Length: 60
Image (cartoon, rainbow, N blue to C red; front, top):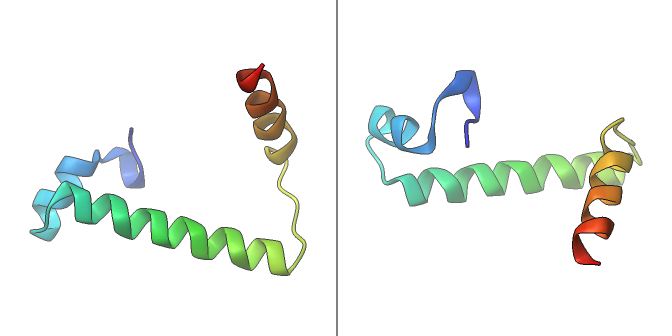
């Protein structure tokens, strides 16, 4: 999985001098914060419908 500028977790970890687990934790925290901000402002993204549909079909 690639995040910022096509860097993998391990390459970001080596650049930052931390473990790839710590990078994953920080990215999850940032994603959660952004999702919370969008939720508070009731912002709907174009991909929300696709993602929710995908998850529903994935559970069946």
